[in-house]
Length: 260
Image (cartoon, rainbow, N blue to C red; front, side, top):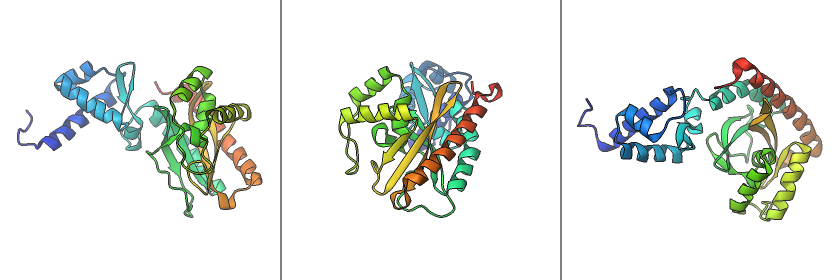
């Protein structure tokens, strides 16, 4: 029996954790009714907590069912497909980071934004690059995002264009929809995305998709301070990035490593 002396705030935390524990151990995504029944919560209480957890990316929702979200992965609580992705990417992207001496990022698509699932930094601090694991970035202004857009079907791409608001972050940010369409088409053709100081002044990024079993499962990028950026360096880094994502894709495509 629950301790009636538990403060309401602590009780809410306890109930939210019980929801996360149930979803983590379930064999498939769960409905609100299933979660409420198995956690012995009133449906309205369960629904409010589920919505709060989903808003903070601790749960993902699809077709009325819930599974663990990326923030749960970041905290090391997930056994989901994203956890497999992070675990398989880490040694390769860490090695890439050490080889080139620049920040390397791993991103996923979440609710029409890029979610930073992983980040690897060189031993020497990189000034001007402030993105952290768990943060989000707009698709239209990031290398990861433009690469993800280029990997979508034309239908999904147009759905994004119809909803997105092109907010200016720097003087380089794309704020014209026709220009964005043209750039994404170019990204699709050349096979890599690029951010030319579009989110942060003084930082450029290049990105390549991670493809497993012919599906784009994530995107990896390299962030380079503009002061040491050159086309020659970009070309060398792209080759190293391409090798890293190819190795990851090959490992993820092995039957024993494919998440359920």
